[in-house]
Amino acid sequence: MNTPPGIHRLPARPAPAEWLDAADAPPAPARGSLWLMKAVDHWIGLPICFSLGVLVKLRHRFLPRKAQAVRENGTLVVTKFFGIGSIIEASTLLAEIRRRYPNGRLIFLTFQGNEALMRRLDLCTEVRVIRTGSPLTFVGDTLGHILWMRAQDVDALIDLELFSKFSTLISVLGGARMRIGYHLNHFWRSSLLTHPVYFNYYRHITEVFAQAGRRIDVTVPDRPLSPLPVLPKALAKVETTLEQWGIGGATRFVGVNVNAGELSLERRWPMGAFVVLIDRLLAAHPEVRIVLTGAPAEKAYVMRAYERLSEASRARTFVAAGVWNLDEFIAALGLMDCFVTNDTGPLHLAAAQGTPLVSLWGPSRPESWAPRGERHEMLYDEYPCSPCIHMFTTYEGMWCHHEGWCMQAIAPAPVFAAVERVLAMGPRERVTPVVAPDAVPPTRPVPASGA
Image (cartoon, rainbow, N blue to C red; front, side, top):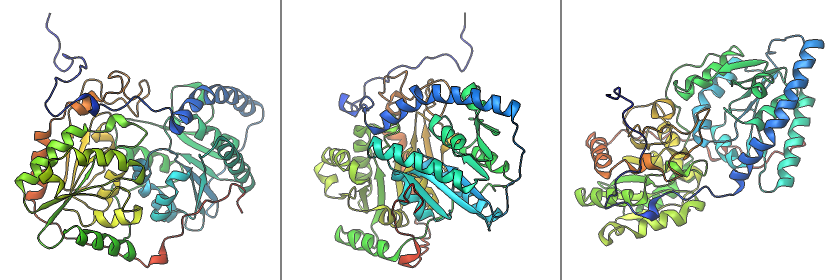
């Protein structure tokens, strides 16, 4: 019996390759703070949401609350706790909410790790954070923000998390008149939302966010991400660093991001594949220099990749992980001739800055999550078990035991060809928007008390 086309293969570990070794497989999920938050969200959040859903249903039946429209000078709260890339993709929605309600207050509630980015985006009237450094501060900040919301008489809370019980509980306990969130076919979510939004995971994430905006009379246009302003001080620091590295003039500058966020390390293309790509690219282009990017916490992993390069490649490769802060990285993106990256937050920042891109995909679908824009080459093998994140019924790395088979299946040769195509387009016009150094609010926590 013949197998119908399109379903003829099951996920399997890719065949061994000379550029792949056991050290390249993503580690099993570390049981750190993120793992703990996800575990608590599932095992503790689920029964609490279910119980609260019963109470909310009873209240709606016997003590119905009169529906009210959003006031033009009212208070709107948007929550998004996970995923820097998702936050950037939501920036158009936030901008349109401000445009639709110019006299209202738009509050963004997130974890402290996202605060610096939100203040750089400068789209909300206030950014409030929940610190995650210890259970005590986490619980204290959460309770403080819930009490603060109840005192503010929040018109609407838009929950941009797709599956989080934690964010759903905040919307209910905070007393928002309208609770807008993504409907799941589960009692714990459907019973707690006043204005459910259908989550169509075949649509692009910006369209998914736009559906939430329509619930408060906000129309979100389909347009590319807007660039973040570049601070003069940050640009000067980057230019000085590049000059010290001998990058300037006719030298072409290619950024490479070997990292992926803790949310899913399975998104990392194997380190050995990056090494082959860089060695081949530098051998083919004497005028090219490579800069390995990353956050301070990622420096050790980036250095491992650097040390695996050939001696000739190391002479023309430089490590910026831990050297450039967020402002400086944004400035550097505007100077790159190409940026090669996994599916992670810096990809979306680069797209906003108009950087020519080569992106690598596996556990998630580029059709749903890739930032829109020109000069963007995407490589996606469409592995049978992909996508395994952002879906209802599976968990990232469930089938491949967190080894990232879909990423291992992408060979260096097609990635090299994609980089060649981007570089062959020639240098792009480098437009550097600049604002005054004090135009970006300082990064500091907003106390849960609202002081």
